[in-house]
Structure formats: structure tokens, C-alpha cells
Length: 184
Image (cartoon, rainbow, N blue to C red; front, side):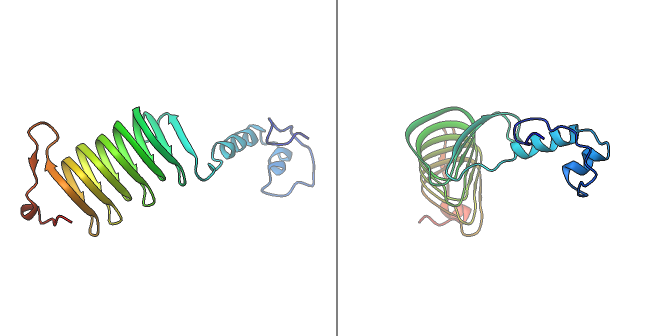
């Protein structure tokens, strides 16, 4: 009998198979394709090691290329290009132009970013231009020069620095009193 980790399992004709086990399916005449399908699924769902940086291309809901900087990873002094989605769970010091940035609670980004959509649960420090929508969650903190198209700040979220509405050269300073925001 071959191990399930290295290839397709041979059909067994054992009568002592336990119900619910892969051998039970083989002994009842169910095709070994079920074994191969579940084996492939379990291999593709294997957990990533903590602290891993992963770049992928493919069709998740974000689509396109995705770079994940895992916990305990520090990525410094780089320019990130051709990345549709950046997920920051560690520390990133970079310049980037992307479609989406997602900073987790423990994540931190320092530098310059031009983004379509930004979701900040951790910290961002630097120049941030969000062409469409900037969302700062309760645990999020954004400081520096911020330009945005739309702004959503959850209760507890922090934003401070030079804050402007609009992303083109005609950006206007956001009226602090008009929006009901307090500059820190």
C-alpha cells in the first residue's frame, strides 16, 4: 500500500475497513478518485508557516497578484510594483503603487503608497494617496500626508497629519471641523 502523501492510493479489498475511513470507500467500490481529490485538497490547504512572505498570482476575490508579508517578517527599502493586493501582517518599509493594501492589526507600513483601496487595521506612517476609499478600523492608526477619495473611520480609529480630500493636483485640505474629526 502506497502512502497517501506521494501519489494515488491503490484500491484495497480489506473487509476490516473502518466506516468513514478512506479504506472504507475503497472496499465499498467507490472510486479511488475520491481519495485523490481529498488528498489534493488537504495538500493545497496546508497551513503556511508563521512569518512567511508569499507572492501569488491567481483568482481570489481580489484577483491578480497578491503579496503577503507575514507576521515577524520585516521588508525594508524596497519598491513594490505590479502587485494588485498587498497584505501586511509584519513590517514593511517601501514605496508602492497598487490596487489594494490591507494592513492587519499587528501590521505596520512605513513609506509612500498610491492605492485604490486601503484597509488599515494596524499602522501606516508616511505619504498615503488613496484614489478610491480609505477605511481606518478601530485598531488602525494613519499618520503623515494623507489624500483620499472617500474616507471611513471606525470609532477608535486614528488619523493625523496633513489630510486632504481628492487625489489629484486639486486636492483640498479637509475641513477638520466640517468633518467632525480631531487632528491628533
